[in-house]
Length: 109
Image (tube, rainbow, N blue to C red; front, side, top):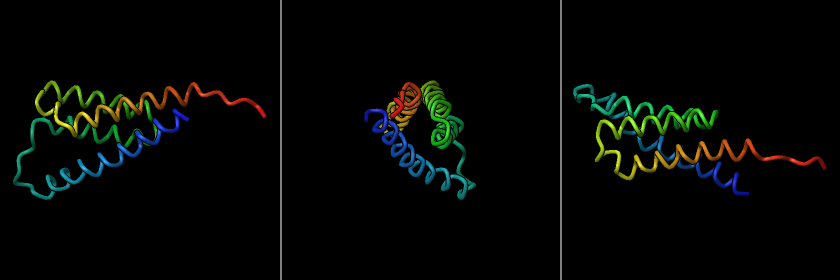
C-alpha cells in the first residue's frame, strides 16, 4: 500500500515537473538569442533523471538528486526555490519507491 503510493506520487510529480521544466526548455531552444543560464546543465540533468525515473527508478532518482546538488553548487538561492525542492523530493521518492518495491515479498497463494 505504502509502496504503491510512493511509486505513483513520484511518477505524478515527475510528469508534472517534466512538463513544467520542458516548457522552459522549449522556449529556450526556440529563442536562440537568449543566452544559456549557467545552471542549464543542472536543469538538463534533472530533466533526464525525471524521464529515466519512469523506467529505472533508482538511476533516475540519483540523477535528479545529482542535478539538484549541482544546482545548489552553482546557485544556492535557485536551488531553494519551490520547483527545485519539488525535484529533490521527487528524486528521493524515486529512490524510496525502488527500495520499497525491491523489498516487497509476495507470498505464494
